[in-house]
Image 1: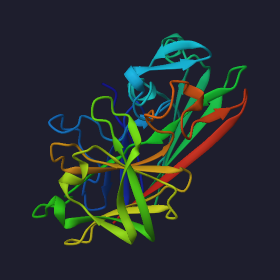
Image 2: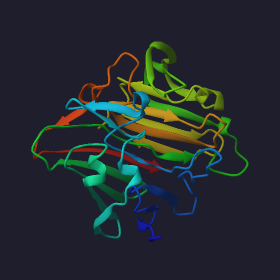
Image 3: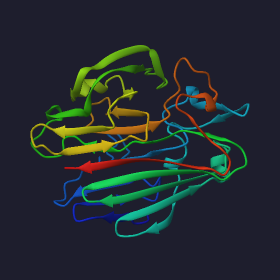
Image 4: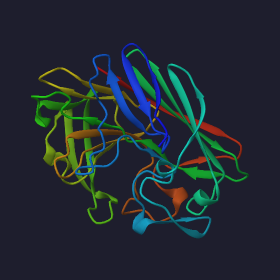
Length: 294
């Protein structure tokens, strides 16, 4: 197994795997680990990159240019080994290009570059999507970093809160438990003129909280006991998912998304899914989010 790529500053240290270009560790100067360490009892991931699909497709299938394709949940990128384009003390740039295997599930000549950049106590993740083909390319993109909750011994999950920068009144759709599809006909209000949601495990027994249309551009998970936590700036993305494992997982994922699981009121046309992007031939788009640890 290849060694992880390491970048950092005096205030944080990040380690990124070649497989999926996934962030697998983010520590502060004192060695406190912020990233969930993939225990399969709850969840075997850390911070997967979601491309060209966010979430699940109905029956794992979609229609692209009149043809049915099968694609796993969250797309193809997280299961492929990336190449390393450049590496400095504070920045690493990874790349994944389409090949015959990816085209069996997603028939486009893409390149996905992922830039990790450390500055102070913050790590920025930038997704650079390039259309190397000759036709328009529909795609979704998103992150899924999960953070240890609790961070420190002697704390409980319930010592933590989810906090947005602005007061919000927001409802989240139900998630169909059989196919993991979003059901917008069943909405639950999660915030009413408020910024904060106390974290409890039962919040996630129905799967993720999916927010869109928020006024806030940052979300924070922090301990009301120790004061430690993380803040994510996600202004590049129209949606953010907040998730933990249904069996009382000791972590919370903050997932900035451009795109989402198939909705129960949608058909299976890939290009027409909610928040799907369409990139013209030869063009490039970028999306980024920044995690600050404290």
